[in-house]
Length: 94
Image (cartoon, rainbow, N blue to C red):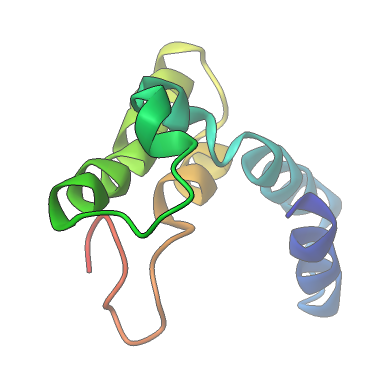
């Protein structure tokens, strides 16, 4: 995730400081999954509707964790919004 994010950032000609934020956000993007039950994280079968709703919450959980830890606002935004889609159908906002 980090390598791809940085490649995109370089292609977009982001400045070094912004690239750093993108890299940190990409590395920490799934930290919110630690709040999910192990059964959901390790499930091999398709998730139920209820499990999918819980899974969608991991970006918000990660956001809250990173804010408490003093991670840069830019990196925290990466972790919060990385499941958003161009057509606004992602999560947590779409």
